Image (cartoon, rainbow, N blue to C red):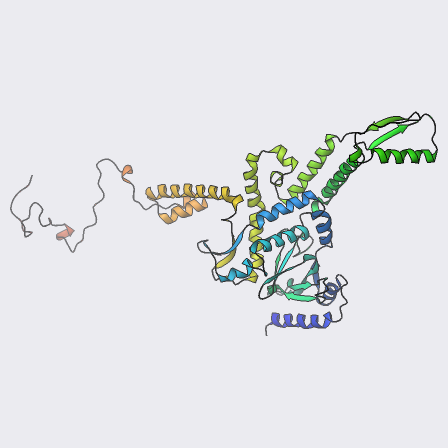
Length: 460
């Protein structure tokens, strides 16, 4: 058995002994046992549940941005791509990705991966043998060991994933090797080697401010659109009188249903209304915060339907914004997801797991632009080949954008030859001619008879 095989077997055996002593469902107990026994572990920060509950389900802006990311990301389908000619093809090896679990689909798999990556910065998918299983990211711990590299230095290597589900149906802690789990982390965490970071982390303050503005607006209307009503009296009131008047005002004029009712005061009360309208500055500040959240998500504000995006652009720019989002965010994420999921399928030799965007309606205009670009390249290639350049060098020059790669055949089109010039005569064949390789008149030409002999006549 190889050194790596013995190390893996030792990990399995040690974990089998250690797991019996674990006391669940104490969060992190299994991960702490691994840390003490085997070295380094990386688990995501304990914010996944809070992000899912308070941000994703509790903030309309965050929900809309993640939903938009999911909508485009989940539209792709999986294919294999030949490395030689970049041609896409499919075979039975893609079945587990096309139907990842009973009743599931590729769109559901990609949606789950994007959702986990947005909220936790990491997505984990395990190959169960007959279908795939999504591992909740905050229950996964990345386990690594220190080993010696070929140069004799130490390095750290991921050896598996510890899974601690807080589920009554699955009370045991599980340990999976790296070839069993696909780990996708589109945004690396700068404080970790392999763990990813949620794009929500840098904009937590903006999200909190947006929530505060929403609560302020709600309170404004809950208090009859008059948040600060002051009643002045010429004489001092007793505590009981203040409480009674306050209760009467709230009962008769509090809440949106009682807004704009006529207020009748007695006992010489002088009302003063302070801040009776929501100023525009608050809306502008909230819109600016929403735009900052959209920037962190990678979704253009106009695509998400945010006020800042709709004010700064028109719907004519929508297609360009979608294409920008696809080029700068979604396509790199597709490539990363394919690289992560490739360990779960059998990729044919000379190929790689890839994505197909041919059926995505939102990117059809982009596909038309690519077709126009290809047509322009084809016209350029045709012109260069007609000018005498070799087809191979033409292809290389166009793909590289470097005209110095062109190689000429030495043959020119008739338009470049002087008037009256003829093509150069082919070299003489010594075996067919006379002395010095001179050719004889062909049979049937002037100066010969029917048998090819000299007829003794002259031609002028």
